[in-house]
Image (cartoon, rainbow, N blue to C red; front, side, top):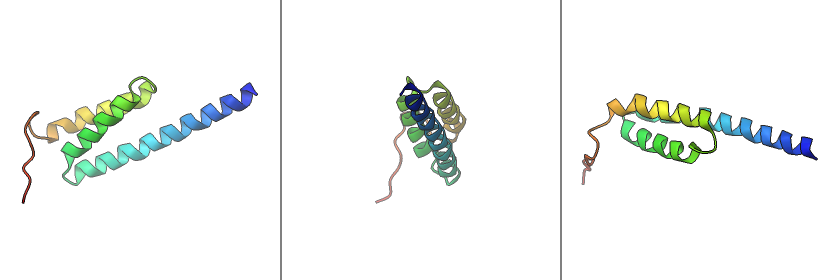
Length: 83
């Protein structure tokens, strides 16, 4: 029974890692399309979600967040919206 539980946990970890790769790619594409601020906001949310459960994934999203941050506006500045 323990071997089955370990296998399920390993499969869940692999699925989580694969989803992390997909999300990182999507956030990079979003930033490359001119939406770096939105990509940073989403990367920050991913960091929050992963902070205590998966340190490796957290580091990847944190690195992306810091890499994209210079491509955004000043902190606290609101985005201009067209009406």
